[in-house]
Image (cartoon, rainbow, N blue to C red; front, side):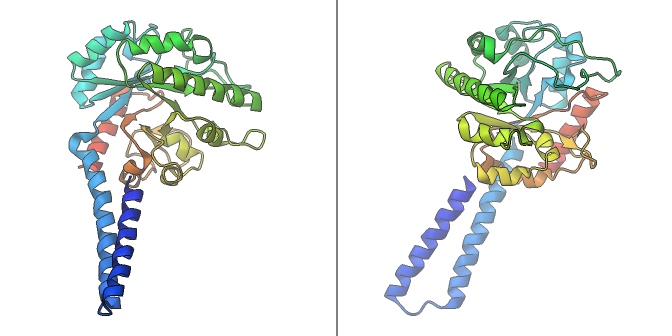
Length: 328
């Protein structure tokens, strides 16, 4: 991690200077400032190097397929081909209207992705049976009509089955996309599920992560659910940068507070009024600052996402092109 490396360099410098003072009185304030400046510059170079590595292909742009929820199932092979043609290299899957992995078995879907030059890195599941929050309206598509969501298996009731199914395709990450946390009891139950799933994923040879929305940052009975998830679990975190920003959270400060914990990112922008997601580069998020701190966060993969865009392919193309300019 850059923070650790820079700190280590600093202490080595101080130790060397102290040793030199004992041997000679020749060292003066000018040479000390010169040496200190060198360490500072070295730290900046390390940070810039980490920033550059992201943009030289060591970390490829990924896509969360939930972005295409309303169109993907209409022509899975054709739409996967379009995604690859835009330039994406990695995929994070989610549930689909066809069930399974867009109507395919895990190995079949992985083969389809591989045939198009795509690597399957992660899959989303839910923590408990889905239910609408009190007073909430059913989610709607671009046409304004309620979305038809097929029955979904969940970690509370189907944990091992879900893990085994994903493990068949040797996917690196399983991610809990959402889980109940609206009451103290729900939060306690969800943390228990996250911990059990994390251990089961380890046994299956994969990593487990939790994906946030903005609600996890709002206190429940005096306790912030996301803080509890960070402190009471050992799983990785998939930080949705849009929803964290909407909740008033500074992602970089979160990285510094919990270095190495945020192995996955969801990359989408948010408008100035904080109302909803936007393609990357069309909102208010400072992407260069966030990506410059990627090494502190522990990020291994990032996935572009846009919840229910009116034109998903236009959205993911805009995000990809803006990221390419940013990372050039």
